[in-house]
Amino acid sequence: MGERMMAVVVHAGDQFAFESVERPVAGPGELILKIEATGICAADRKIYSKNHPWQLPDPYSPGHEYVGRVVEMGEGAAGYTGLALGDRAIAEITVPCRQCWFCHRGLYTHCDAPGVCVGSWAEYMRIPAGAIVHRVPDELSPEQGALIEPLACSIHAVELARIEFGSVVVVSGLGAIGMGILQVARLKTLGLLIGLDVDDGLLAIGSRLGADHVYNPVRHDVASEIRTLTHGRGADIYVEASGNPAALHTGLDALRKAGRLVVFGVYGKDVTLDFNIVSEFKELEIVGGHVSPNTYPLSIKCLADGLVDSSAMITHVFPLAEYERAINVRGQPGVVSIKTLLIP
Image (cartoon, rainbow, N blue to C red; front, top):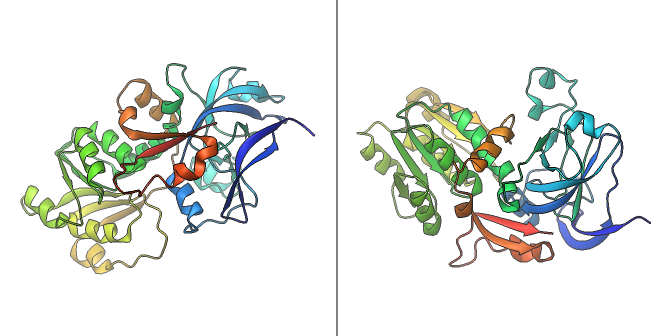
């Protein structure tokens, strides 16, 4: 028996447990990180609530938002990662095969035979050989380091939106991804930046982080408000990051003709849209968004340079052993939750 560590382990797809497991050991090309901080993703909450679209291994340890220090390196790992013992690092979720049609064209997050780098809800984490690894500067706090992955997703959403100077941009859903999108989009010198959420506490933070207008769809006719602001035209770009099917309908209504809808949410059920609006009446462009290709370096820079207010986004921090309390903090009456972190 090797050394032991504590980790959150998911059995049978959705049965979470905090238990003692064998600490990973580095094989050829692998790294072992001692985790400093790790985040709870909306996807983790969907898995916990048994409302998700993924096929999951059994068992597995969740966690893909993190930062850690290299404590062990397998043969050859130093050469391909450029890291040394004691360095801080993070690896991208997708471990590309580098051989398929998509990898050869730089679309590595759509790899036909990917590995997956997860397992940060633990004291130590194995980074598999071939993972895309990034050095994390020491000046970032562990809490900021755990924001690198979600902010990288936000940057990808903004890149997909192809925002131009003076654009009217709507961000629907002001969770961690949406609040990151809001802050990164703000750097584009917009005409108007509009935030939507059903949580008034999140709307207040969105205003503080740069939104020109914020609306609660429960109380406001969002599309009408946006048309008023744009002299009847509608928004240029609508980025949906809430995962609420109703928000997609709002997007179709709020967009101008020839506008762009970026879909970055994860939905627990099928969504039906009126595609006559997409084609016949508005000729809209719909773009799907997925994870964070080629955006980790810019995410690290945005955090290191203070271009994103990380302190506003980190609302709760719990010890790893209290992962269930941490998962359930969102949605509690009177609680404003953006990003919840776990500290092993």
